[in-house]
Length: 408
Image (tube, rainbow, N blue to C red; front, side, top):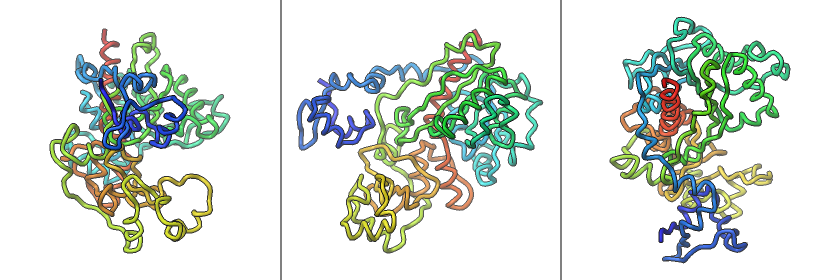
């Protein structure tokens, strides 16, 4: 009989350990046994949960054997430090052009891939018309701004002045066979759902059929981090009768953890190398020393809680990101752009310090030989803003699979 310990089950079901205790009391999920203080659960009992069934019965091994039937060309917008671009490249795409406004991110892209055509600067000044009918896919993570409610009637024109408009303009000028947009989960409900409605209307106006958007949790795609991204996939209308052939990525066999990121194993062939990092001020370090692995501010004494939290102590909400120390036994919380922000702390599991650049990069599944350019703060920003490489790889394989089917 295959058994999983309580940490593995908590990760797999993306639910806190405390909830597992509640489920045990009400009979929803009962441990099979206890071994050295750890509760163990049978694989059979976990199959009652859809996500466990998907992970245990995944076709990941055949999924990663998907290869392009021919060279598929790509344009990537808002390329940042390269997370999406590396993953798509790994899946088999040939990048024709990448646009990014941040000079340090552009330096990173050029430094690591001198052969890529990196167009630095404002996307509004880029003419994409010369690529018309020559590109298979356009990808990009456009920043999300609210549009006018009139956009439900005016569609494309109403999005002027937003970066989504530039994403849509590129699609309109290039007419790729498919496109993939990625964004934060919050886009689903942004501006009461109006923003997504305008986006859907605009995509329809451009001559594309939108596959129903889906939120993908990176932790199920060989990424040791709980990042979530909303994925938008569009198929050009002359090909749209085949849109039903699209499948979202298969899930990986298990949920990876911070330990998988930092130690030699399934993700990397060596322990995480030394790299640049920042340090805590003296008093903050003294307080953070008191936080146990996987703990946060509520694990402090009431006196230290009041000192550390200040006015936030009296506010509602869980504030679970404050004074948070990661755990080697679980995936990381979503990385942010600053390594030691009070509201979204990500302290090393054992050492009392913020994560280094390389540790942060590994949680985003960047390869160790991908060298970030610019000052430390810029490197952290590039990493924090990125799409995790392995998530992008999985998304890329799904896109390759669809394009192969369209070829036939």
